[in-house]
Image (cartoon, rainbow, N blue to C red; front, side, top):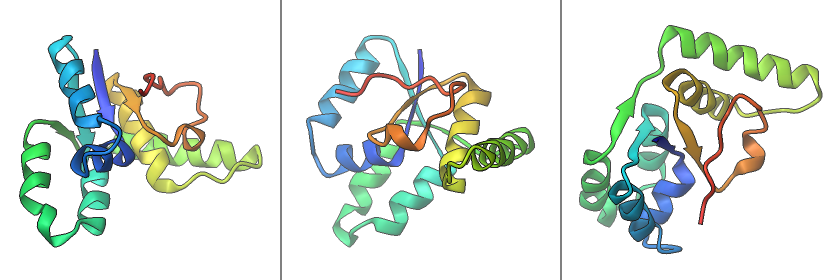
Length: 127
């Protein structure tokens, strides 16, 4: 299964929280492929501590990285618009990540499940 890692999961893996690094290694051993988006990488670098740069590069080098395509951009805008009309304000960054996951056929790993209420987004159980 293709899995897309949201920023919360990446931060936990980098900062050795919740045994996330070990859990991700188990997923890979189980045949899953791990990926993230360029947007998630930007968020990681925005909050990165100076001493974390080499660990960050090591973690990211093992991931498939997806960029925002025109189709994903349109889908992200539609998702944000649709949910706004329902009275739910979603962050554009979250709708972009959701759209990339949908377009690429990935299940999303996130600690922030409430940020991804779209039924089109497959949320992978997080331990």
